[in-house]
Image (cartoon, rainbow, N blue to C red; front, side, top):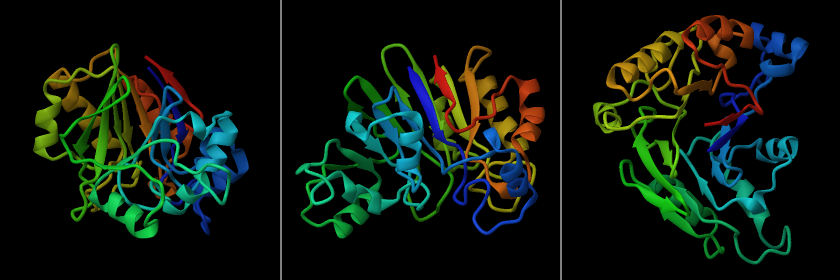
Length: 268
């Protein structure tokens, strides 16, 4: 399986809109891996994870074509993950396509927003529920319950093919016990996990800081869900986490964890 990290930033990106934070200043000056567009990824160039406001830029940067997608999986309704207006550009009158080229999978709120925004448009929409797997071509996709929003069934996605098992865990704090219990029987080849709060923890429990990230990984190790062969990568970094890319590497590299960056490709 191949996973491309199209974006690794939180909602405001890095450098952040309207911000003179230390991390934003550093990113403007040094560029490179410090610059983060809004969080998104793609599996094997065909299975798209989230549709944020930077999608056009990300696809152009990586030389990808949305017409190759076989499905779009949406984690939750936040604008940085589901920029609903971007859907309209896939069909007439914005181009000559009369039908949307791939199905959309999302929770009840995602589906309701699409139906309300685009009544009678030619979109194939499938509602997803946590712990209820769906089959998409050769992939088995199981939405897991994320600890992010109390009024929405936010998802992390467990994606499996014949050879690999991948967990995409963006926008979550410590998982609820039901998710931990589900992962007891899972052995991951790759884990991509959020670290929005970086070195600056907050009282909000819907994101992880560096210490919490390491605690999640340690519990997964004790369970046998990850081991020394599992590829572990961070994502969804906020400038409010008060950590540059290099500062995050200093924290995570001793633990064998890769700090994600825009354009990083993982193969496992």
